[in-house]
Length: 280
Image (cartoon, rainbow, N blue to C red; front, top):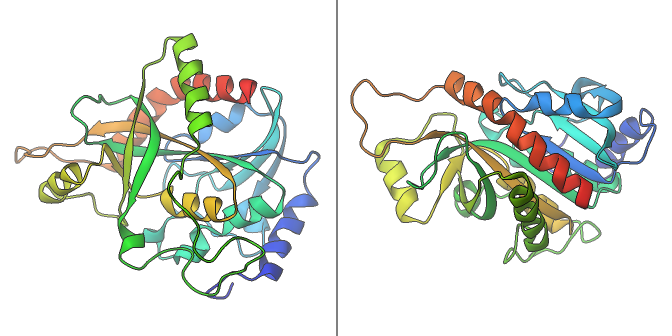
């Protein structure tokens, strides 16, 4: 695809997907690192590999399956992304957010985005679920915003409002569901960094001082494009580790650790998502 996605490219991808769908999706669900198994709960699925979709970015990260799964989940027709592409893989911001534009073209009006994140808030524990209330978009503030370039006025405004990036009603619904399931559900601000290197202790202390409760390497560019298109967004972070602001020499953070804890939290996240979808 070109540097900036064109309406023709978006429609080419949407058309390729439509040809393989048995039902029209209403909700888009993006699964982060270690969470791809959630798609196994989708009934009567249509499965599309990413490499079958024109202009669609492939994911090269372990824990990201790289396919679309469309089907029924708790009475909702959902289109599930098993894995996403990241900026640190060498893609541009326009490429990693291309799937959101295609989902919008498919008629999806609500998106649920999940990710694996490091917990900064000292009140959090590894394995917690955190609703994203707000975010810090460090690459975006530095100029790497996915809306940079020509604006398609038919897709959204030149200067979209980001006062409420994450839908308050959807968060209230998630809290109500969690209370009914006796699930602990945190809420906070997610700091988006480019990666792929994990943050230094000094960087983590800076993020904490800036008001971040968790940090990760995804989600926010997709949220910016989703809000540009007027989609409702619910963001959920799985806290896979608690960062150490003053680590001992032997302490490290690995992607294997992220995947391991992500797998442990899948049952809780699955219950929460089932409950949210059932009450949408």
